[in-house]
Image 1 (cartoon, helix red, strand yellow):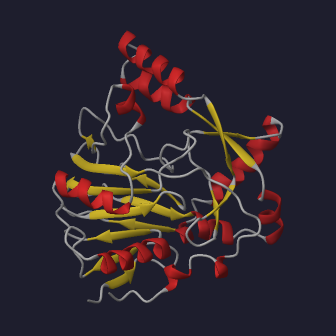
Image 2 (cartoon, rainbow, N blue to C red):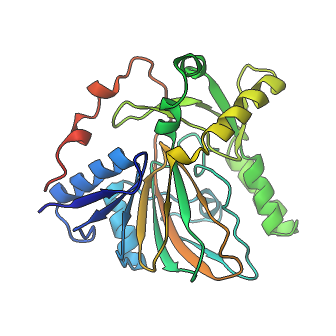
Length: 300
């Protein structure tokens, strides 16, 4: 069996055809995983996964995550996160971000299914943080290597309070999160991809606070430059959803955002993330010497 991999842009993204992840054999699945590592986000048009199949496919990629808020509310098994936009629930994910970087082991992958798709708008965009790193000058790359960024729970706590209208219940939930998770975790600004050895700008989004060891004004200047740099359209792809589509992305090497241009139309998506490992930077890792399997032919 041969799967078809059609790049969406030269930097990131590919549509994968000719495979059903619910039923394919392990050899074919490994080919899909290689395509994911190469293109960083892959799309399966019309995958039509019901919730049970969505979770089953996720388990083929690793251990499905229990979202931190769900864990605080007593969840012991992973569940799908249903995200619905509409007239009474405006979109909230239009900023560039990587999911849950305020924990010590952020997710490895995410799988998103489109359920209700608006007639116009509502696309999702992804940006390659390997391409963003590669586009920097060698001098800038060397300066960033080894720096660490402090990621905090502050923006997530603020969102809990905002969604809860500042209620006592929202404040109690925020307090429980603060008790359960450290306010600050440190991650490398440049991380090494464990599958292929490539260097990645690990920016994160709203949870990113400051560079460890720098004065606030120094950190703000450098992070301001990087925030602007990573949104360059050269590093991006954009997916126009149809109902039943499946997107799978590598959380370690991408950022993403949901366009809010469909509001107030309804839009519903289902998401599950896969547990990850602690980010690290290996100065000696070389892409040509790591992850040779990712460059194997995409035939099964």
